[in-house]
Length: 237
Image 1 (cartoon, rainbow, N blue to C red):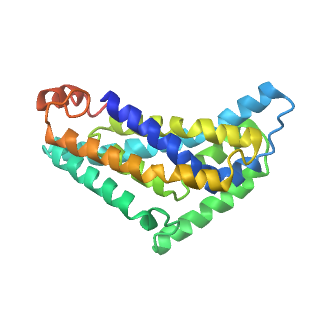
Image 2: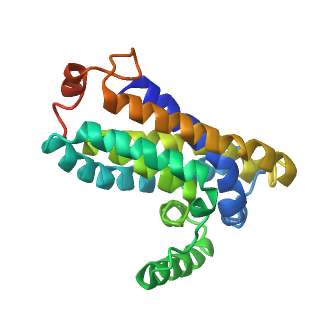
């Protein structure tokens, strides 16, 4: 997997975590973590955070299966270009990113069940419940996650999709972790200003995917077909 995509995934996760703090922060704040015991607090906080990352990684692997299908029939490059275009369009049409409900009844019912189960596990304080809370939290609708999942599909392999989403998830941890430590760490006004950079980052990531698909032999950005083949030899693993 190209280092440029790893950095982009981390950056997208870091930038989008400001949105995550606003959307998922209340869940984190209600976990009942006690900062007085710093070691236990850190461990329990990380358990919750890595629950989210686990979900992102699994979703990335699933989307990687789709990408592998395209790669198997020789369409990895067109897929990469298409994903880049979609990401740019998502950045230019931010209202579509904020859709918590896709207007599909089965999707709405699924989200309702997830939120109900979140409430159940939030009332429990053991380690497994914290991890499951993180797992379920990773399934909640989020435009930034949708954008990242779109990118994971273009990786063309199960492993590539999982790795891409893992780094995206890791990028969300610092601010999410800090928000649990300090409550509303960043003011709404500051958060909104920083969030304005998210569309630009998505556009940059989209451009990287387009260049990747064009195989322009640009170091670390647009590898040649031979390099892509080497990277994709073990798509199924």
